[in-house]
Image 1 (cartoon, helix red, strand yellow):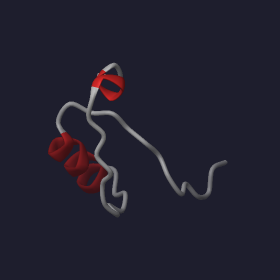
Image 2 (spheres, one colour):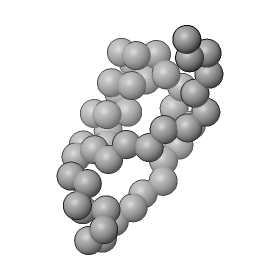
Image 3 (tube, one colour):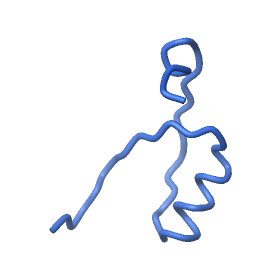
Length: 45
């Protein structure tokens, strides 16, 4: 059983909707964001 998660990274198309879902629906704590842009990160979407 997982008891603690310190960090996860997600690539999403709509950051605000993703934050609302994870915070409001799943009850996770929002600590901030780190943005990545450019060809290498565009491949993830």
